[in-house]
Image 1 (cartoon, rainbow over the protein chains, first blue to last red):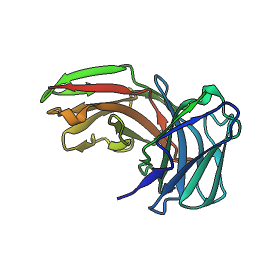
Image 2 (cartoon, rainbow over the protein chains, first blue to last red):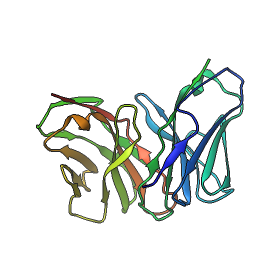
Image 3 (cartoon, chains in turn red, brown):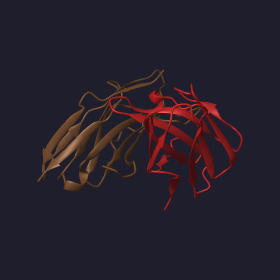
Length: 113
Length: 115
């Protein structure tokens, strides 16, 4: 079974803090994704990566950066957290083959106060 | 740009009954993939069913089936013999066949199965 894990289920940070969200997958998937989930908006893509050290912006990259130093790990970084970044963050991974399903982590609910 | 619309924010169904969740999408692509994902309360998102746009036959997975109408850009999910474990958020999603294979999601439908 594919397993995607995220470092925290719940996180509370203060405005202006630097925040790291970690995601690890154990199936040697090339693609990794970070989504943000908000009620009434569904999931929106923040960044994705199709290879080590490669990254592509998604639909809402502002205020975020990412890092992929190893194939199995994809980090989302909030350089200076703001209250409007309070949300559920979902990581996913997939093979690079087109049409392949994405496997999701359990999510991190981030609250910025 | 691709957009996915789910017009039913919430639905409910009696246990053992059948329910249909609606999804429409807009794209200029001719080949693509469509998905239904399920997110149970406090649990991970999992794939329910997948459809390739070039296939005319509707996909089925046990109690789950889709009605794919390519010309109408419609992709509804039918759940037969609903079970309590089907209670979840359901997301319809679109993926292009070429280029970046990220998903474009709808806003979701919260389904509650009533005992």
